[in-house]
Image (cartoon, rainbow, N blue to C red):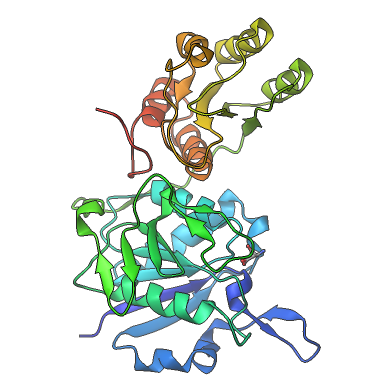
Length: 339
Ligand code: ASP
């Protein structure tokens, strides 16, 4: 029997065509064969569906992540793999969120998008869709994780980051190699894949949106830091620090962090650098943060850090110790934990 893939459109440039006046509008997914006739040659069955609300991915929220996850959960046994067409702007966030939501995954979920709309001559969307479908349907490779395919590379979803608003190679995974590369043939790196889930699939759908990202810069004032840390209902903060996780050592800054921690706010230290890792205590400038209980995020991306914190706080609202532990572990291959 042929493999079956479900193609889910959520919105974004990839699903757009120009109308008579030249403005971009979404096209109905069931007409995908008209736009990409090559898909008729695929030796697997492709079924299509779309979210009730097609969105520009700048409007993405956790409730859309839940909608996407529920569609996949409902159809999980029917299909061999899933492809999600998504706007590029927040695709790395959705890929990360889905990676945490699906525990014991045993089938591929591949997100892709494009820089140019499908209806445009030089579109990169055609290639991206065809490759993502190949990967999601491919029995030999069998990638049991949430991946993001863009411009010839399959990245682990929760390791990817959008890096260009211009180039076709718009995504990168700075701290983890790509899982596969498309050339004349696909070359896979199966030794990097996450282990296939052998237990029944579990899908967790609670996210806590009461978090903040505090990006440090030289000269940041106590007023700004305190305004963020004292936001109503705040449960977690990600501080984007300098280099290998360094921050001001001034007393007002450490006191502000200490008071937030004392109020039960979880604080995670993530570096502003695209590549490399937080190493708490490598410099004096991170020792105090370590001493007061700020967690080091190692080489996690901001996208994975945001979604992981929302996921852990939402799933275990009464278990701060578990949230703390989860943030220090690699749950779905999202960070490198030094031995
Ligand atoms: N603004 C669009 C989106 O993220 C851009 C894209 O699709 O690439 O939905």
